[in-house]
Length: 497
Image 1 (cartoon, rainbow, N blue to C red):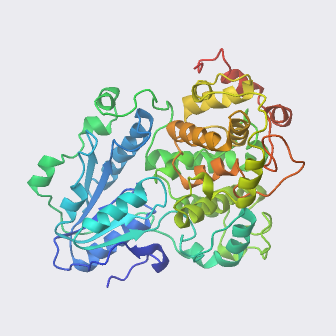
Image 2 (cartoon, one colour):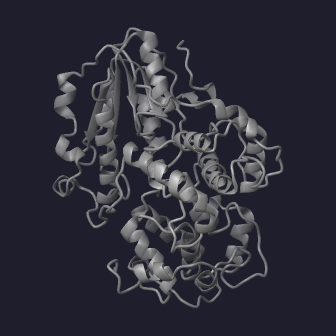
């Protein structure tokens, strides 16, 4: 068995097949952690290839039949594939990018590449269609298939069967248990000085599933127009996908904006957040890379960890207040979503809400709503409220909503729809249709937080909301700085729907 720097907790066999030492190559199906560095799955694939003395093929494929497929998401992913192609070029790893030209055209590619493989490695991502795709492939490949978790600082399996109901519960557990995992780091540059035999891919495979052309990887409007995806959701300008662009945004944030994070992050008029979510979602940037840069900038080691074990946000990381606040979002809240989605297949269903939230929402389902809007009115930002409309326009134009306003945006959809079930459907569809970081455990955490997940019962009890935490645009306008934001995304702006 291969000796690997990848912790055992991050590796799981996806089928009952054996590793085949007499196979022709190792296959890494890069379907979640789409990056050539800081990637435990790539590390695992390389170690198998080295141990067996076999070539390594990295397949990165892009389907067109997934729900909400659009020019926006395709271009972001394709920009990442182009950067990955450049990173693998000149290395001893064979990188094979495939873009599906029609729904179902890519069916059978993984099995074809695995037909003579020693072992198949894939990314263990607990959300959207990836768990189903991995399970289907594992049942059809003739060799061992391993899933490797490269999602967070904490291996998803570390807490056992625990499902954490609140952020404070996970934070308390992390403070007592995460320290040993912080020294387990994926390789920063696993391709450097890597020597493996060069892989060959059979002509029968390349003819049926041809590698993506440079034109397609450039994600030109003409290339995108040829694909059967939603062309009405257009790419986000001034945002480039891929590991190179993601690492650049990380440097900008840590070097220029992190010191202002605590003061600026809740104010829409200021660029106070990291804005790393799209690159984290598509696996272009690793949490380990983010943490490594923070530690380097702050000259931090695990010896600096504080004694706090009570779940408080303060006194554990001991970098500085801004970095500690950012780490709580990056680690606690992000790991909370990974924990839930990896243990609850119904993570996107109304019935997954805590019992108290379902009870209070049921008690108030027949309450009179002051305003009611259709899906189309929400989609086109045609409500009576300028704050909500501005947030929706930002979502449509930039593929994101300012973090604080996203909460208010969600609460008002609950207030302005006939039932909480309809509100949830609209929340999920609008978020996943437009948000570059949608379809992710973290975004589902945010959506379901609106309806009570990870929260507690609040008083006084209100119409429609019951005991669900209440937020409003009026209070928000009085609390945060957003004059410039409202002007930018107002009805007369360039982002008018």
